[in-house]
Image 1 (cartoon, rainbow, N blue to C red):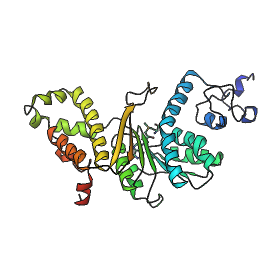
Image 2 (image 1 turned 180 degrees about the vertical axis):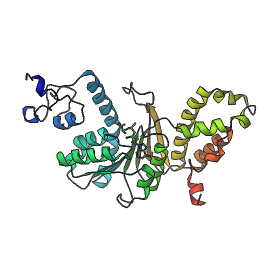
Image 3 (image 1 turned 135 degrees about the vertical axis):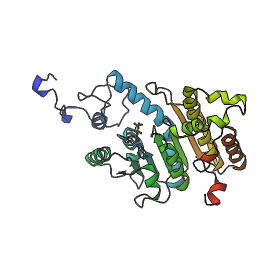
Image 4 (image 1 turned 90 degrees about the vertical axis):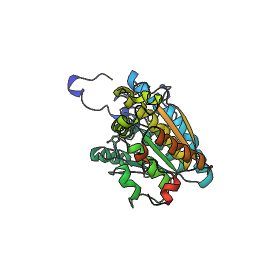
Length: 302
Ligand SMILES: C[S@@+](CC[C@H](N)C(=O)[O-])C[C@H]1O[C@@H](n2cnc3c(N)ncnc32)[C@H](O)[C@@H]1O
């Protein structure tokens, strides 16, 4: 369609586009083209540019990991609830809903948790526009959502993609308290551990040659980030989860592409809990015991 200059800013009329696309191989059968346009994954003309092709590939790549987890819950219970923390524009939530939840036609539900009001508002509008009744968006921090009465007492699947700083840790706390069966995390940079490493550097250096690993500031930051994810994995294992850590390939635009998938198996917890304490002591992070609490600490009321 040829458009004149005055038309340039206006969205292309959706009626002129097919509702599902067969000539764009990246778009899955049954997937809403209009939704992909609203999410700016497809252009207003219903096309994919290089950037959006990459974005779609990335979301599908992640979907590939999440779909079997959703199927697992649905097979067991018939319905599935998912909370996406630090949802942002909710690309993931909307694509999961369109590709999986929509067809269930039951009480399955996706909750998006996001502190930025305007993003929550926009997602609510989009869910209303596409008549997705099983989607809710709450203007809450991850920590607030753990005690919010707007969320059910248990949640099946918890996701947090690039949720900033300690929001990933709050998402783990949320998942543990909500007895989530599956947890999918792509952590963002976490500055808290690095700042404690930095603060305690004076005492730690000289204790062991291994402290050289975080002596230089850039290494403090990188090692802080690495050890944070190690502690998160141990914490999840100490709560009975089986943990897999892999790379979210295709996420080239981001330096942070570690994917942590945890599934509750009621596994023995003592060894990972002991290991976690040992790591905290070895690197001088004892004061972070509450952040990476294990069942014993929780029971003791810490
Ligand atoms: C980097 S964006 C990621 C958005 C989305 N998950 C994605 O991968 O496209 C992080 C989002 O988390 C939100 N956020 C940061 N800290 C949060 C917190 N403590 N609770 C809830 N949302 C938070 C930010 O407002 C932002 O929208």
